[in-house]
Length: 54
Image 1 (cartoon, rainbow, N blue to C red):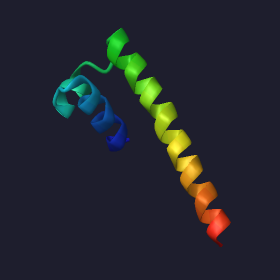
Image 2: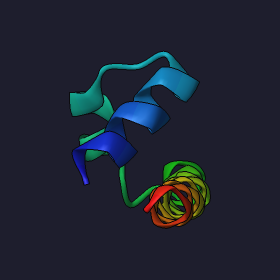
Image 3: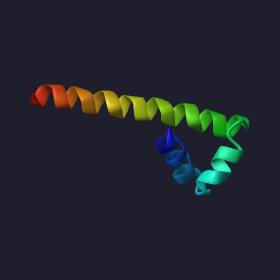
Image 4: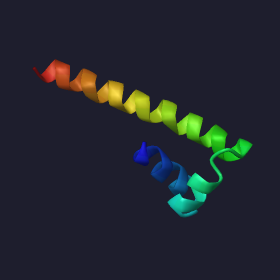
């Protein structure tokens, strides 16, 4: 979960605390959803690569 806030804070160039404080505003909420999908895809791709190595 922390990775998600960190990615959004990098995107917005705002501190993580600002992102957490504004997480219910429409723009930040949209970015949180967008980066959640991206992080899930990265995790799935990583797991697939690990499975191929074994």
